[in-house]
Length: 193
Length: 229
Image (tube, rainbow over all chains, first blue to last red; front, top):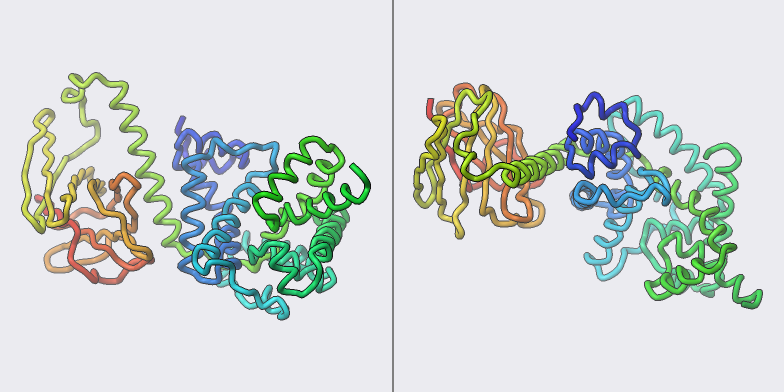
């Protein structure tokens, strides 16, 4: 059933997905308007090129359009599901382009700082404030923990590649990943979730 | 399982959530989790910590052209899906009798690079002109005008090189301006573009342009559709 855009705007993400599965472009448009910005930001953060980020987002959203019915709410929110798709596409792009992901400038805090937003809307400004808090949680981690998390999640490196890169044992890398995630989880439980 | 083995699995959960395990290791862990409530609980406990990572990224404004391309493609595919459904549901012998509700005019088309053939589908005054261009196989174009809005449907398109999109242009007199329609072919070689402001337009053209579109056409038209006044 096709619904008008104004009605779609009042639906929760989980209610939009079945509409998208029924090929309702208005529902898809609302979905993109809600999440396209963070999807593009994530893709750009990973691939580092605007054109490539556009390709990643376009491929990810078209795959969602064509398979929206595959969303399983038991696996988390629609937004997290969508961002997982974008992240995987972006990492695939890096690996196909270079045979492996490029080395991140992980010794430089600017890796999280150097891409300014332009002409933020109110909604984006609010999200930026939330983002600032979340980045604070990430920033609170010891550097050795945030490094391995960033290299894995944003760089697409495997634990063994990270171990070789940092010249530490594999078990150390996995342990730092776990400790880092546990601290972030603790911060979320403390008020950011 | 001894304690050491379980501790190793526990550390693997974090690496798994971060996408840092190899395919074989990930599959092995998934099998373990399926049989280990403790590790499954650990997985669900840590999952939110990974899910917030994308939210820590500095916001970057997505280009409007990206949204336009996506919606062009989505609406095109939605239209194709609805047409396919309608075709399946309507006996072929009835198609020629269906009223073209709301269509002030069904106009068509075209001058082409390699020549053209005109056919008249007849009933209801509807006419369709099919154009064969110099491309191989030839691109087929159909333009349907409804008031000030036109819908251009293309078929037999080649897939575009990386970084290229299709851009529609309208010509009024000698002036050619962008129709503000960027789109890409579907996997089956079809594409649809909606063109607003058709009044006074005597030609609609489509060119391949760099991603984001151009101010003026940078190459020869893939198809050029003459609009009868």
